[in-house]
Amino acid sequence: MDILLVIPPYVVDADGRGVVPETAMLPVGPLAVAAAIRARGHRVRCLDLTFVAEWQNVVQHETQRPDILLLSCHTIRNIEPCIRVLAAQQEQWRNIPHVPHVILGGNVCLQVGIEEFSALGLSVHAVVRGYGHTPEVIQRILEREQGDIRAAQVSAYLPIPALDLLDAATHEHYRHASDGRYPIIGHGVGCLWNCSYCTAVMGSRWVERPLGDVERELCVAKAYGYERLWCVDNLTLVDPNRTIAFDAMVARHSMTWLGMDRPELVAKHAGVLKQLRALNGIAMGVESASVEQLAVFKRGVQATYQKACITAFHALRDAGIESIAFVMLDLPGSTEEDFWMLMALLRACAPDTVSWSFYNPPANAIMRNQQNPSDFGFYRWPMGYAQIAPTRTVQEAMLLAGVYWCGWTLASRRHFFANQNSIGVRFREGTIFFRASAARSPIGDVWRIWLQNERRTP
Image (cartoon, rainbow, N blue to C red; front, top):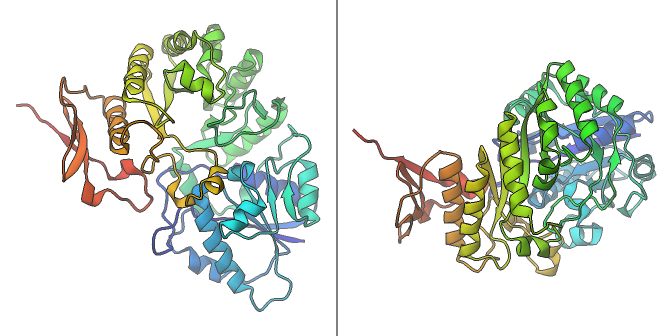
């Protein structure tokens, strides 16, 4: 059979043009599925439109009708591009008998199924609801099954992604947009937790990935010019012995890596950090300073959570490892007091930088609340779940950016300001603001339209 894998633009603008992203990660998930299909003797082609503004021109040249079309939908914001790309592609094949069997897959499909997609205008034959690399799911894809496809069990044996399906120019775009980082599952698939705010709930237990498979993928990544690994499985220290073995493997190949974890685990296994030679950064989900708030999200934290956060960040600094704190704003029911509690916790932790995002409900909430998918996004205008005005939530994000991105100090008083022309935050060194009339960007992320004035002293 002939299979076409299509990766649509991340976002399209009002005119339907693809918005070329400033940051993007190599799509190893879809390429691993492609590799598993190709291993069974089928022909697989790839149409990656991530960095193509005039993607319609590319689609017009794709006149060969495949037997199966695999469409990647990574986030809620991908739904509109998927609708447009699929419609354009089907228009190309309108005079060809036997339209392809269209199968949708990606992170957003963990929470949204075929009926919900259809109601949103994205009509496909099947939706892969979870891991697509398992032999069971691959077989059901090739049998052109209809409806929602779920894996009965998770396989830890991940195919090496078929990176050769991308041309050299696309690889270069991904290397540049990812700051040279290759996303890899270094420890295992699945997760030990089930946090309700997570957009990628795996719904499966954690299964260790064989380190021999990891090393083979690592070698492929290096052959394609990647020197840094971004360990995306959120489980940096879930098994310290495996972490030490993985780190030694990365060092042996003269590469470095970054990982993600929970502060509680890093604090528990802080003694391991100084044994790691290739690890140069860990991002940890602090999210909120309120234990009560995190309990609502099934975060599973203890009363000693804040102490664990402080211990974890200090241990990373002592080990010479960069630390990144993930935090969320606009959490349901949160107040301004909650924000200042978060700032106090961050001061005590002293991370090297902070990555903030606005709260987004689970993807299936768009159906329950009849919301527009294009309104979703971690960096779009906040959706107003907090007990404060969305403009204040944006100012909180500005404050975090000034302190942790610019290294500025908050003004002693009247740091927040808003008037008919602009809103912003004052610092001793300058001001971060945006004008209300210009508070939009092609991709919709609020921080892209912020302005910055620096005060220069004589």
